[in-house]
Length: 79
Image (cartoon, rainbow, N blue to C red; front, side, top):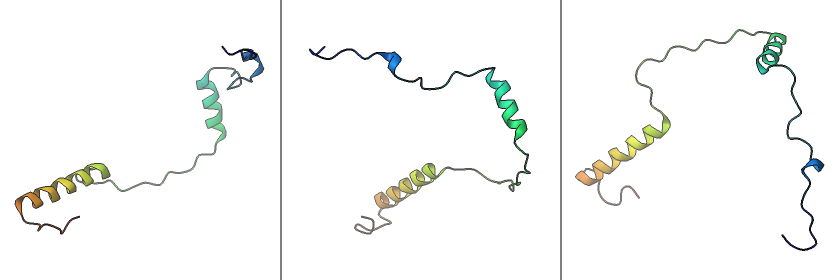
């Protein structure tokens, strides 16, 4: 420790969260009961395979690489 500096006293800082009262589930229920319920819009069911954007980009890159290696795509077409 450096000279001239006192160690910090944790009691001088406020707590990060105020203390809670009651069980969290009881608080959550009371908050949810006060909120007016709204009808949720229905979404049409998706058919077919679901693929994320990351996997779509990966497959596209692999396809382009394969086409370049086979010579279907000429050199210089894809930077």
